[in-house]
Image (cartoon, rainbow, N blue to C red; front, side, top):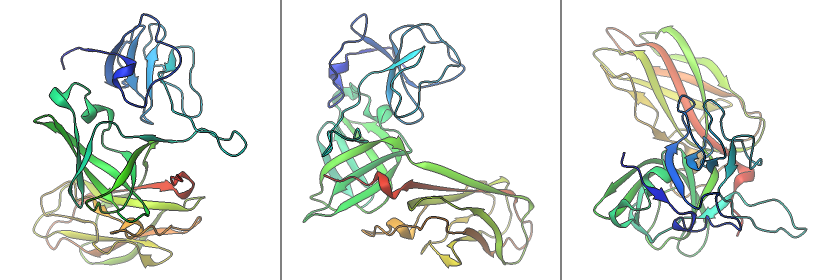
Length: 300
């Protein structure tokens, strides 16, 4: 990727009171623990927060929220908001540019010449929220971000987007990814309650899920079902096609359409194998599900 220098003021809403030593930021994209960084090189942490290196470092990750610095990294900026008692820092920031509607699962932002690299700043896994026309909070996870012809187009999964949305924001935390493995060969026939894969300790909104095999099946597709205390939370069930090692990421009922239905804390999230592969089933299935705690919900 062509090297460029990005002024902090180039990123709308990411403007703080103190400049970076040296004045400019050499943006490097996603943090890589195997890369050596030097002072004033900037990265995006696993939580999506922008940091700059204060000294040469390799293998020392930027700090996690709410920390803003460590011996090697310092937060570029984080927009705060006072509560009634001067309370906690907000975790929601305004999306930059000029967002516009594309479809029920997509929007775009002006980025002339890709100068701001919004496709890199707001990558897969980031959470966005908005107000639908007439009011009402909505939320989704970014699946992909692609630059073309002076726009970055984002595809999302979660609540559907209607034309006329307002107040588009992004969360400083990324969607939480949980997963479980079903080792060995999958059964040929359906099997209920194949495993309890996880249980969250707080209420959450579920975004989506996907199934991945280490060894692809043959002949027919496999269909899975993910349940909350025995009740399916996927109207369209995750499935994986014959000869494929990765299924289609599928939206959870928790945020299906315009719903915002919480999955209760300590629910047993279990897995059913609804139908199998008639000839050679897949092997070593991994089931991934993305979610966010309901306490992250944006409140204007």
